[in-house]
Image (tube, rainbow, N blue to C red; front, side, top):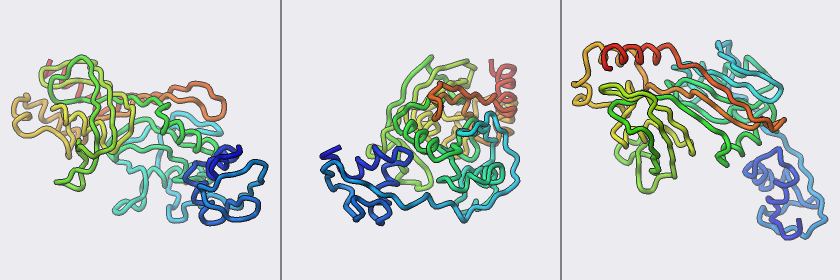
Length: 302
């Protein structure tokens, strides 16, 4: 390890922790080199010893709540949850309780010792589907690294307004909308965002799509589909305008309004198990509200 930066050497030795967490401990003196504080960029000579006196701080603000959870899979390292619509993932301003995180703390109190109760990624409040939660620090670190390295496959089902081509890729940066700060948009200085889609079925005014993500930006699929002129049915933020809705049969308009949310569902999650290395695939069935909309489209908008 001679010649490595202190934080690089620490990452190689303490591989249960992320580089950012180790750097924070180096800066606050919890992680030392030869018993002394050193800068993260300090080069090690080789043969030194490192000492770590720290632990992840539990989230002391979130409280356990008996919230019903649809658990698809559970083992010593993982929980896989089918998130329902209307469930916020993390506590935030305006949603201090009643979140998935609160429910997880009730389901498994030991998750309080992990960052964000082990939650590795998020879904929007009204988006349904499969999510993975780590149950150990080792699993959390490995899953976060796999997500950052784009080694976790995430596949969604969406119902878009308009005629989508049979397949395609959207490679367009996503960032904060400069005109509406509560929204995201395709912007030149945004973060790289890549989505791939495949049309599963074409209706007269809609397309049933399978969308896979290379990146996971906020509202990525919703923004990318709007960018293509294929906004998601029912999307209150990026959805279709009045001119597009005017062409729909009345029963279809009623069905989209009844959905009351964006027609987006996290269908499949494929990953390497953080303990065994085995490839695991988890699926969440299409929710009843999206199934009902598809049946209406088959009948009224063939």
